[in-house]
Amino acid sequence: MSPRNPTEDLLRTLAPQVLGALVRRYGHFDLAEEAVQEALLAAATRWPSDGVPDSPRSWLITVASRQLTDLLRSEQARRRREDRVARWTPPEQWLSPPADRTARESDDTLVLLFLCCHPSLSPASQIALTLRAVAGLDTRQIARAFLVPEATMTRRISRAKQSIRASGIPFRPPTPDERGERLSSVLHVLYLIFTEGYRELSDPADRTDLVAEAIRLTRLVHRLLPEDAEVAGLLALMLLTDARRPARVGPDGTLIPMADQDRGLWRPDQIAEGTALLEATLPRGDVGPYQIQAAIAALHDQAPAAEKTDWAQIAALYEVLMRLSDNPVVRLNHAVAMAMSRGAEAGIELLDRLELDQRLTDDHRLYAARAHLAEMTGDHARARELYEVAARRTTSLAHQRHLRSRAARLPG
Amino acid sequence: MKYIIMLFGSQRDYDMLTGKAGDGVAWSAEDVAALHEFMGKWNNELVESGEFVDGRGLSAPVHARRVSLREGAPVVTDGPYAETEEVLAGYTIVETDSFDRATEIAARLARTPHPAGTALQHEWYVDVRPLDGPPEPEI
Image (tube, rainbow over all chains, first blue to last red):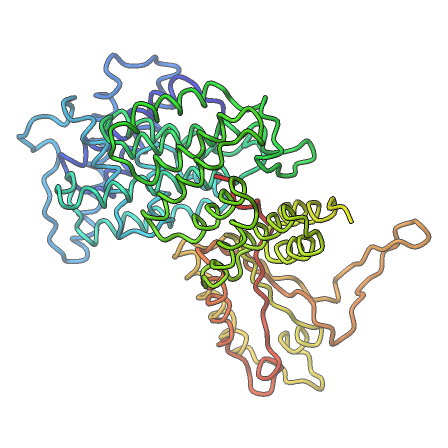
């Protein structure tokens, strides 16, 4: 990504507010989104030389409204050619209060997020649309983050907008009945953006930093919904996980597992912020999966050395997670935590039961965990065999190298 | 995840496709047009679905050059393949939610139109392989 400048930061903060104001007033989410992108582009080219207007938000709304009028006119002309009656009122004929008012900025941004993360859209569409409409990134930046051609990303975004248009999802907050499920959907999309960025080992020098975007968006949601414990939990999880980023990769570009990382490289400010968030949130008692995962991340981050990790507490937290959802990877992590706190045998017994879970049959993580526990018991021949099985099952060469080096360093 | 779908062909396949008279079945202009139309449609569907990443066809194997080492020095050989050796003829890279989805996309190629009697009828195959990528993050 190009170096951030104050204009760009301001524009990206205003983007969802301007879009929200336009959609609330005129509808036409798909065209309004395009109009806002045009207005942002106009501002990005003119403000640096002409100076930032006194009310940048009003300026953007005015320019975007004009752009939307043009788009609607050409749309109407097109529809007339198609012999369909178009029913819309050009913005200048509206008698309602102007779109430019501040009372509902925060509502608008939230409603926009609910819309972009609507469960009827595919994950790829939800992610692309959220990054464009709410984070204010342009298509080129999003395409570069995912290493796909711009045309592909353009299609993902326009498909998402078509779906919204076709399903007639209204631009309003979800009803109280829907709200829980719809917010989970928003948090899941933010989590996916985070993991997509976190998966990258190399420094995103010329690529959009999705980790930074995910954290920025989650901070925004946390500001808008300060009372929501799971939003705070997700933000804490991201901060506490990203705190370890500087220590994850060795000088030769290989992945370093947490146990072997140089903890002096972890970012103390992020650990402090994530921990403080959790300490303020957990006592409220409205505990969900993101808070628990964040609590696990905090226990790892707070251990001054790998062998000082509070595995008993981590195992207990995984037990809570298992009660919330039946996820085989959670059960796998729980087995490893049990082995670390009560001895390898306890973990091996749990892994044997997991062996029967169809969802994990081909997953290298199951064999890597079994290898690790076999190593703990001192059965090096069995561990070597299992590391090799795991190595053959992962599609990542870096991971393969790591698993084989674990096998190679076993004595005997 | 990103996957590469690879298509293979021999110099002989290329020759038949481009209408070389010989022992094989030559493709007529209509056959070739039907092939191009089919491949174009297959490709466009991927662009439309937002799954297309990249795709190319390779020129005939006869144009291949191989650079190898002989006594420590690089030596260039022209057209190193036998007439019937199957080599990479084209590839498409897709980004899909699952390996199964990428496989399903590749399997559609089994319906590629071809004149009766060509190799496509009996020993046709494509390969689907995951691209190397970073491992699952430790969260």
